Image (cartoon, helix red, strand yellow):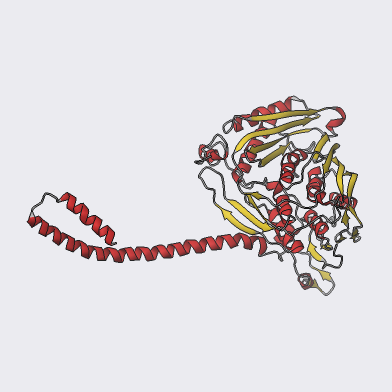
Length: 148
Length: 373
């Protein structure tokens, strides 16, 4: 921050270049005050920096979490559909009959339609200008990056 | 291949195709239990039975055991054989259901596969033959599977419920696959499409084209939608119409969307104008998702990356579909391969949604049954 201090001093020099010695003295006082200000600034700056580091760490953690999240989503729950056999044995009436319960969501998924199409759950309103502009640059008619 | 490998066990009929395909490619036996075990009509359906028969046709020496109620399936894969074949697909699912899996298996046959498939070419559930032709074939080419013999030809169009369509799929064999680096999809330069109509007025297709163009022209001037009206024998057994759209980028990425009319006797009649507009909007959604591979072909791309040479492959995808997520889990259990998955925010503001970068090192799979000449 020495550099910024010098700059500020320089700026003040320009403003008060034509001032007399008295004002020069005052300016020195000003500068002195500024120094105090500066120390306050520095504390602020440090605080800001601390905050930044924390923010960066949080952002990093968030990103770290989101990336393995997708990984977890794909590879984390693979054994889910392997429901244990013992589950069925529990619901017995008089040791003879099984209580047939409606299928759970996971079981329905196991016996769901085998289809590779990726259906769109919430279609966007493509008549709206803002929705249309969200893909505007995917086309050759859109904006091109520099150097292409 | 390793016959005494540990048997994998699954429950439920979902993802039957990818399990059978991966079991065949990895040579690992597999068992599926509880196939619709709690339903009133338990066991395998006819379209699944037809699929299993197809797998049996393209392989040599597979052992398939199904219990009496059809709720348990045991599969011990044989060798992929290929050759000239034909198969009658069940009309309850589209030919796309069968073709998708054949696209995964065909490059690894002993003899180049040339197969005639009969059934429903376009329906509302499965990716149609038109879309697979426009998207999957360019994708295979990127992995070094190309040549004149790679083709999908629609001889006859068949709509549900009765079908009556016929296609020919031919694919050359490759000993090794090239690793790919598909990280930049590029900008979309043109939109192509096919509006088809069978056993209805040929004017339907024209009406679809008009309405689809009215939406897409706001983005791009280079749009051409072919009208395809098939007559007589080649129009199948049921009436219907629909539209397939593809968006091609400067880097050769193809994104697609499609819609078909309701099958005869099911649901309300669809106006061709409405269908055209909705399909155009679906294509815009697909563009918003983006990536270097169409959302239906994500799993095919990931499979070919897995089976590539021992080198790093990268591909940028749109959001992962549930089918793809399950496919990744299966890739891990069959091939012990895990992908590096990174989310990527689009570089610029008007470039659609978040993307996913998938990275893996190929397992160095080589087609053992192909003789080196």
